[in-house]
Length: 114
Ligand code: AMP
Ligand code: ZN
Image (cartoon, rainbow, N blue to C red; front, side, top):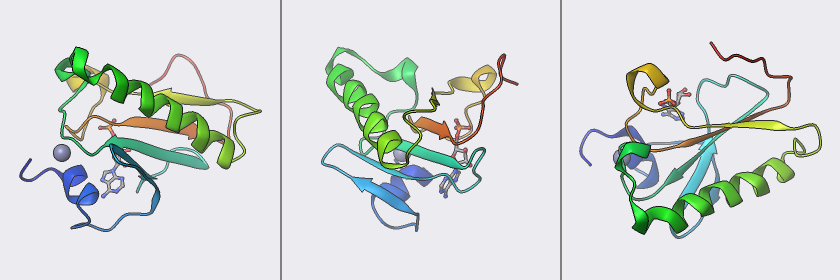
């Protein structure tokens, strides 16, 4: 997808702090971390948002959560807990239109979110 920064990162045309690379997805550190651990899990395939996934993506979405679990363990936030977030559209606060799962941990989160 032209002009998509996450496609640029996935294709290594833009630098990132990559922490995981697999066939269908990658994970890298958020450039503007909102918690001591803030990692984004991103499918290599461009999908705008959850509104654009379909049945064929079910396995990919499952893999995103399974990778998030492993990354939480690798960063030692699994025992204390962490938050997984997917922002969608304007009201969801989505700023990058390439589907991504936030992993946030290392501090106590508040609820409701802002
Ligand atoms: P969202 O608001 O849910 O769309 O999240 C987009 C996230 O991408 C934000 O937390 C940004 O800080 C992060 N972000 C934007 N550009 C980059 C980049 N070049 N490298 C890493 N993270 C980025
Ligand atoms: Zn993209």
